Image (cartoon, rainbow, N blue to C red; front, side, top):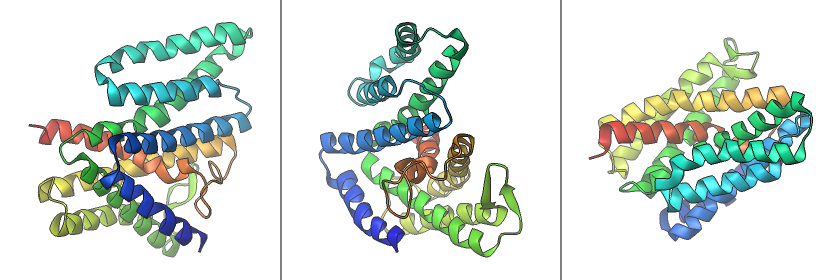
Length: 264
């Protein structure tokens, strides 16, 4: 019931901002989600005894999103600025060279994992019909996750990758892909006209697979940090990162497909 109530409250708000919100409001939505997810990431690695640089990581995550949205032409320079900044931070804050790579690399990974991947939603929003495309992506992931959840609960015989996620099954993984394909077919037939049907189905198949790698990646992080959920912000769902782990991988995959096959 908590999962249902959380969804009933959150989904209309998110969809409303995506479809009808001012670009500044949309930017704040993405930034808020990504920074909360980044905070959860740094909390998880702290639970594993890894200090990292959480404050600097959050600041750099925000700058990465802001530059990608407002001045994307300088985004490549920021790729050099991030590791350089983290090295300078380590020089001033730490003295133990044996943990230097841990602090720097875990912080760098957290920035790229949350803001680097999540920032693709800002890039997608700039495409023609970008806001509608984002809703389409959300529908694909939600449909796939729902299909995998219910089928996986019913058929628990063949584990997908038990060492990482004991509850995920091969049957659930197949159902995830089928769910995304059905959602793409229905969306394209009923209301989504930004992309031809054949491309909707192809990208749905790709996202149905790639999204599960995003889910497994977060499961690996949680297992390594010995936590059940990334946070407790969303009742019945866990943390924000638990809700967007698949989306973090799907957005870049979709954007690359669009640029290669659909961009004019």
